[in-house]
Image (cartoon, rainbow, N blue to C red; front, top):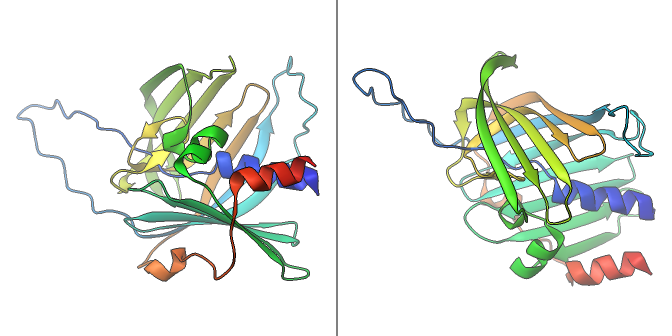
Length: 244
């Protein structure tokens, strides 16, 4: 159970949450770029370990992480829902324009639920949301290359960074310029509005690849992001309970 909870926390910290950057249009005549409306809807992703470098010391194997999840978006929030081994249903809600974060972990077997909230300080301490990610170096590069995902033409952006713990990280993302949410953040990138449809995350030990398999544009009403009618515990209390 503790290993499963550890994976949940990792998922919460690296949860996928959006991508953006201002790209300058330097074409002749400085043509005005087409205005793109904020995306509202849901995207289904499949994630799995796809590569382990030869010299990696990790004990992870290629089939150690494989799962699928949905992300729901509107102008204010993003919600990630994941079913883990048909035993747990995990949901994370993150504010796009605010420092809101809460998580629910529900047992599919016995219907019990843990409701966890996190203050901005806890988000920063546990690096739960993209805007709270710590880094002492960061280099973002918009690279050449194109990739088609779900019949959508995607562009490439790469982020290299070194954490305060001296861990080298790299995120390579392919984003659709027609899918964006103003003010959105992706882990380690910071504020980059466009949503990635495929990305590789190298954490210094192995590569996890996330790929969109379904996109549905639709109204996502505020009730989707409502807090549960339950008594919450703090993220600090939750982490301490798992360490005992």
